[in-house]
Amino acid sequence: MSATDAVRFWDGIHAARPAVTDPRPNVRLTEVVTGLPPGDVLDLGCGSGGDALWLARRGWRVTAVDVSSVAVGRLTGLAVSHGLDERIAARRHDLRTSFPDGRYDLVSAHYLHTPLDLDRASVLRAAAHSLRPGGRLLVVDHGSTAPWSWDQDPDVRYPAPRQVAEGIALDPATWTVERADSPRRIATGPDGNTAEVTDHILIVRRTA
Image 1 (cartoon, one colour):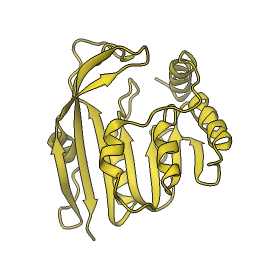
Image 2 (cartoon, rainbow, N blue to C red):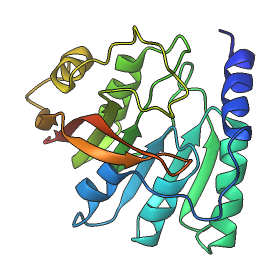
Image 3 (cartoon, helix red, strand yellow):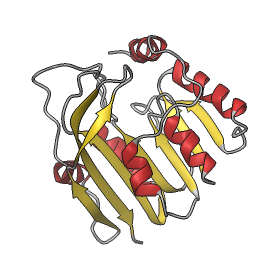
Image 4 (tube, rainbow, N blue to C red):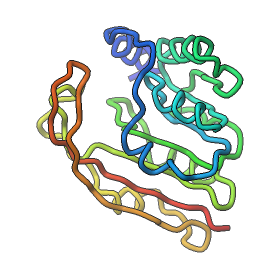
């Protein structure tokens, strides 16, 4: 899939979803980040912008990136309408070809699944290297397919958190795995229906 095809695909996904005035943050983000001191955060694959808005309201300075110009445009507008435009910088970025500049206290990668030819391990490795000492990389992946997911491929397989960590191949002298588990929860989809889903959670902390 070319860069143009990638933008067209994700623009189509986001354009097909109704624009919302106050999108919800991801549950695992709120669970993990609540209690952490605010700093600089990179939101990889910002989507509808719920995570970026939630973080900015709690004092974080947010760099939010997505390959979709629709997603980035909507988040830019939401940041202005909520008075958070000084805390949120939304940028269109193709992670297959480049990685955002900067140093961060937190990098959040929620459900960074894509049909594109994306070297996820390289992206997550770059994310870990962009952390300041003491900073955390939070990777939350699907461990099951929700009924409302755009990807209903019955053959899809989701790597376990420890497998993701092994794929990133970080030096244990500099990074340590703080958490790697697969909790379940009852999730609510865009149409209001609920289903039990499994999340794969990986937290890596830069120690040096």
